Length: 507
Image (tube, rainbow, N blue to C red; front, top):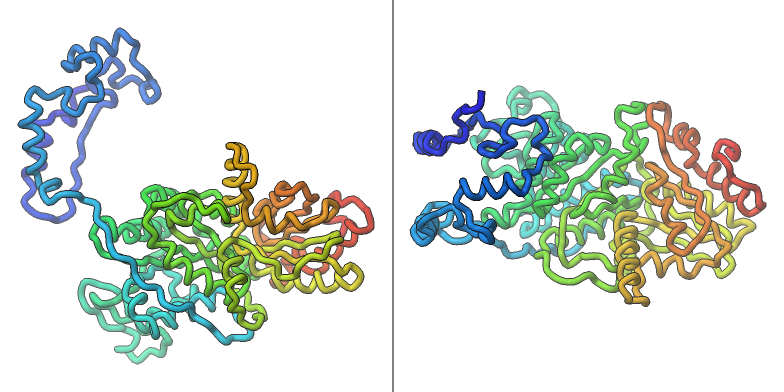
């Protein structure tokens, strides 16, 4: 079997022209891989190459002269007529197919007053405030979620903005007088798209909506909310959305071992590393809601940047190019600090880290953390600081941006720009050589474990490497060695000169 018809141009044209409507249509063409070449249908031809002799014969059969292999019309007898035809087909007749859209004014950052709140709840409240008070921005936001709309705190937003459908559909629960806090009426004016349990569909939708400015000339700011463990279900679509330079915000929540009683089914370990390694995606994991507010305010602008410009030599990040944003949030409510408004704090949050507790000149211990483990770190630092006054606490909001800036600065230094310094270079430059960095996160320890390589400091990374345990959050933090007791024990061993061979020996 070889001539299955899929390579017959006449048959293809006939099939295409037989469609007289604009409904979605699938054409299935049976083809032979490598058709018309000496490798046609051969099981090894996926990586096969023709010999020089075979290629010369192939070019002769196709009528391609030497040196014209890459010419646009090397196979066409009348190039001018072909170009004229192409200029008139509907695909090109109206000019470019790539459009642009004006930027949407972001407005002021949202400020909340909650004294104890989880970052996931803060995300929902910030969106609700935007829906209520910022029509310019909110009318361009489209949210979506794979069956976890309520449990990712999108209720307030959806109640105000409604669900999208081509035709109006009443809220059946309301019609049947069944009590519910959710107002689920569908209409063409709705701004939330409810998906079934299909994370791949989520990322396909975000990728498509995030290209609306270039495909349709209309700006949308898509936001998707998903259980953080299930980010991995849509990685192929996520990767190619970023590859196409789509612009969206993905919110992964709950993350880590937040849903401790549910065991491994809802625990995420490696998503921080996904955020760090995915090109075109700026990943953040704030502990506090004032950090989250600053990040979201920045993100709505970052998602609209035009992709032009050189790296900022202050951080060596390519912020001018813009991109998509990943927020890794938690359902664990923690006590909030007094709302911080100063520009230096906000800039540190966006750049990826700031000193929550500045280290002294003789610091023996610095604790660097990312995410919701902040209370455990602060408690541990207070206990260690009872007899070690120079201890520092580094609040990392984005290991991704810290690492990206550091590696970019290293490249610049290798190219001769010896004074190139990233944000993390400057933060850690003030530490004495004998200082040890203890890193803590509710996720994989490798997320921050690289910090010791920045300036050559000894580093002890603490985190979660295994899933499946069930219990309270306190139980699991103790089990995995990321609670205050474990941090203090590690620090005591360090300052007393005892080796930390395995965490189990010091808990």
